[in-house]
Length: 369
Image 1 (spheres, helix red, strand yellow):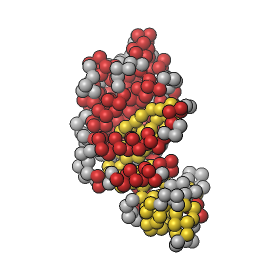
Image 2: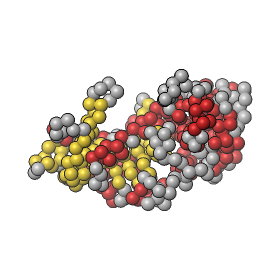
Image 3: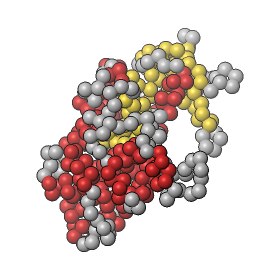
């Protein structure tokens, strides 16, 4: 089995883990390479990638349970590396959400890249840690994101999107105080003041066959009112059923703009699918929450690598089309695979793709991945 370590991957990991010693950088590089090849978070499966499986399994276990590998330090270094690659103009779209496996929960801030997303910040918690503290952890993460990670980015370029669980007024106040734009989906049982009457959001109606309706700047949340812009939108899902969105924001977006921007939040959901299904993070069976969190660091690096290579491939359409013929079914106009998935399959078939991984290159946040 050819387990040679690609030079570009080594350079990428070294650029991120500048404060770590060489053995730890080498371990991360090897395990990321194994994860991309095996596409499973199962430790036994990862060990089979290496010639000496028993030694590899022990090495992986030592890495995952090594308290000297501080995940928080790594996450900040990883985020700084990504932020340094951001374009100098345009929206920086980030989505915050939770992903869970049994009683283990991960709060993830994702950088939206096209219709995909890559983890920017993350923190793992046990079920017991979340009781009465969930919103507190969310606000801590958002504060870290704006005041530290994106400190050098103009606040007017940042747009944060989040699902219904993040629509509490304390979070709204925090984002307002940090002077960043947000679009958050509100729960249908929250009340807003319309024409002098407090009404639950789910009682609001469209005019005739409207798909979007802007309600203007209303008082939101009867118990602790805040003035926010409200957009009412509906979309059909794949089953043909209507999905209703109540979107609150602190900016005067047009109804279609607010809806379109919120829809890009689903890139983080696709990112979770890539992590869990494509790279096999859902196969991970690790009870220790910090070890589980360390495993996710390998997944995060792997996703960034795939996005970097995919974005670079889009600049060479002829080569891309030739490569895609090797992994997709015979379709002329579209592929049943995402580009991220295709790159995962192609890395094993064409090692020349590693030459596209340049840790100094700017990220194309509009890439059609």
